[in-house]
Length: 119
Image (cartoon, rainbow, N blue to C red):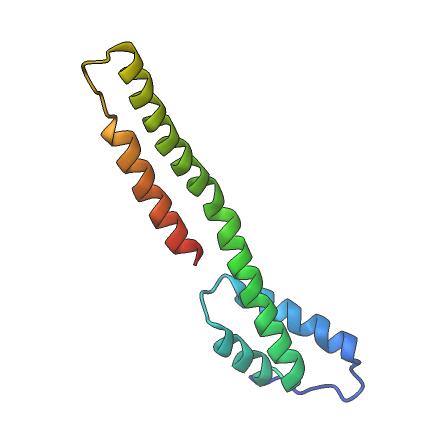
């Protein structure tokens, strides 16, 4: 069913309707062009649909960064803790070097995977 635009609808009303429709599509995993096409199909003007689709994509990206940020920081803490343990073990037992490989490699892998999701 296609929406029939109201000729008396103001620019603000159309913008509000476009954002409400766009926010419904935000978590659906659709890309910017598909959101734009769906908004235009609902009778939203081309300029408003492009603006809303771009803003929805930006908001989705910002949400992903906020979600992944703690994992990235915890990965850096793990790497730092592993290096600190290695330094302390070198001071305590100078002839024997203990390298906490699990901390360091686990932290590096977690940091890389978080960074790739953020990009």
